[in-house]
Length: 390
Image 1 (tube, rainbow, N blue to C red):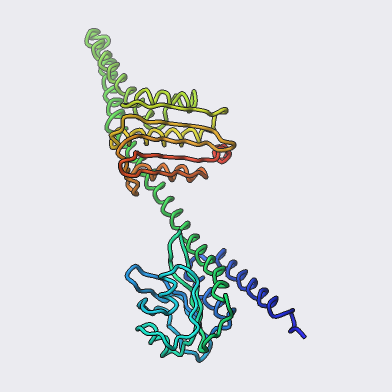
Image 2: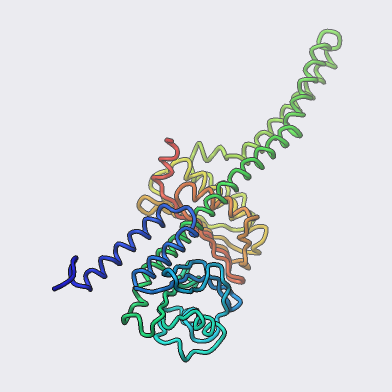
């Protein structure tokens, strides 16, 4: 008669699914991957009937750190925080070399420092699987037994579902870090822009307006006693006013081109291209005018890209394409310059990436040396409309 709960294979599958659900719930709710590591290690160890289990993080110097540890009471195991050298044919080195699930059914004949260390702990066999994060081998989960040949065939492949959840926890943490960094950059950029405007207004237009006020006071005092001097003072005040208006226009142009608000993105890009210091070919295929937030984001991406081309690319030509595809706006800027564009945190493109991300879009830069630079933007138009309403 089968045991309660069904045949052993069915019960094993149910146990595995229950363990995966518990880990998935933890991944979804835990703020830090460090809370996930011990849970995964224990769940996998218990599921496979092991006596000990470890999670290791690979280093680039041929070693690894133990970041998760579980063992049955009274069973010696590799402790949390231990540093191990990846020598020999034990599980951690084998997985590091192959990047695939591995098994060792008998540790008895193995040599090397790590093998001796495990043999001294009484480890006789084990199975393990890699943790792959962002396309690279990040670590491994290894479960061990004090008996040889203790694990069923293909047991190492049953660990893969758990290591995928570990990778998801790492991805969640990285996304939170990137979001926090993006928010910090947006705040810093806003503060820097505010200080720039304050400085420009104080040093430029404000000083001219003060001079204008003084000139008008002088003209008021002279208008009866010396009309000629009053006219001269008014003429100087008119010149100051014209200069102040010019500076204010320059500031406003740096904030938001008026043609963009009045006539839309296509007209604003035509004006931008006419001022470009090198030939620019524009392809604009957008049936309906995008929401203002999308237009502003697309305009500044193109403006910044053309500025970078003029300053650094040594290009002879630029192609700019703006197309609508369903509910998305696609923008591409490609030049035939030297490539190798700077995409570090100090470059202007990072702030534009934050602006696009805030609208639910993506910005991607490809700039191989010697092959020009391509900037691509994909942003949902519906999100831009919603942001304007909000």
